[in-house]
Length: 209
Image (cartoon, rainbow, N blue to C red; front, side, top):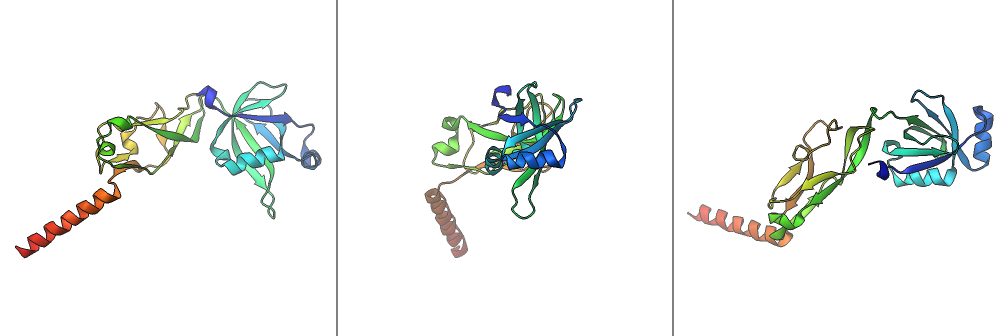
């Protein structure tokens, strides 16, 4: 999945401490630091608007990034903290942690549904109801899956697909312990109404007998 990891382009920041951080903010930059990974901490900064856009997109703290800083080797990082202004709730500082290939991290992995044309329930007019379009997994940084695949072949109306029905990558496991639902094949509203009506008639006949 190396090609799928988004780049996070930052600049090396001159100086550390409150004065340097204030100077970065005056230049419409958000100061930050990269730590961990058997290397010295690196003071960085990112354009304010770029970080704000990333934060609004969601899951900034659970996305693996390929950090690019001019003059330094690219490295995989994950955000560990974003400090915000207590009044305006706007970012004032961020912390990134370097990851080894063996590091364990929590990431949201998208779910892909395949072989819809082989799904009996969909052929009968059923509807695929997706409960979770992505699943949070604990994964190894060096072996992150691009997606989870659910095969709909043979699935009938009324079938429910749980996380236990999905083949997970080796070493990966969900952050939720229970066997939660990924999707189900539900009856179309017209068919459901007809079924309910038939059940009602059968109940009336049984009562009459």
